[in-house]
Length: 500
Image (cartoon, rainbow, N blue to C red; front, side, top):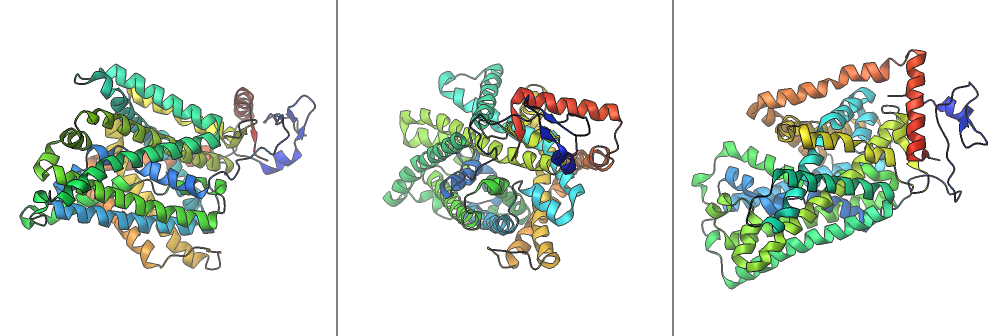
């Protein structure tokens, strides 16, 4: 990992052969010219519609189609499960509004990483970045991609089982295509995301509309005694909320691309509020639709709730449901990669990752190295890693760091009271959400101390890594030359340059 030196960049001059020749004789960076002489930068291409599509398209993955039964199991009744879905939507809105304030007052891309850096300094920000890079993000991307591979092949193999190697090959193709799309064009990535978001909403409409029709026809027998309290256990409610908050996760991804948002002061809060209302409405109405056709017992017994629903109500059309689920997963992969690449881009710009990761393709104007950094780790975990256990290790880290970010908002209110805040939320909103996050972290420690402890230990390896790679920057000259050569070679191969 190399620290960027602004004085070194100022001293460098572009030589006639297209290489940067610095005055001190080193040649750490190669400068390629944009053939159209355009300014090489990430433009403001995220409009309100694209912002909404990033949030909705990333939140709605396979979960609502496959397994909303975790909430039902832990809440104990149909009525309580619907209340949990609504409450989790409201709590997620609280978190999203808190992030909207941060996104309009700190106008940098990078999401969690940037806000932790601003509030608590570089060491804690690096620990978050380290856990994301070595474990959390590759594992999460691999799991999402595996769901895509499974469901895109389902119609071809019905009713037989799909060979595991076929799923992994389809998954690898899915990952590669998402990486390629994000590498070639920001505009096309955003357009595809809008298309995939509409396909998700169409899939949900195919469930909601027939379900509502059944409800208005009088199919309400499953809602009788909906609030039967005999099966409700208070000890299960926190786990129900944990499942619900996981289903809503993804509302924070727009904050990863703040610098590319057109008019962020208005677009960020508006996109977040519209998206959360749409997602909460879709989730609640989809569950109501399921219950018009399935009893609580049938829903708990189903392996894929949307498929069971479609088989009961839509007949042969049910074969299309796995395709919609696959498209939904693909949209989540595309949206999360688009956002996460910007976090690595910003971390490199801050000097906490190799310099080449903050460079932009000279013609495509995409952060190509930052897009590709997850590719090898994701493919490695896909074929050799125990992905699901790793996700168990890391699930609580998401809520720990999101809680730390929102705590940072409260801290910045006192540390920097004069910071311009075009959008400001009442203080009780971040306080309630912050307490919710830390409660879920405590719940993880209580319910699964071994896996949580392992995840915590993996994250803590970021502390020695910070001192080795970042804090102690007096490297031997030969090592610095190797790192400079590595940066320069990658820059030439990928045809990337520092942003203007």
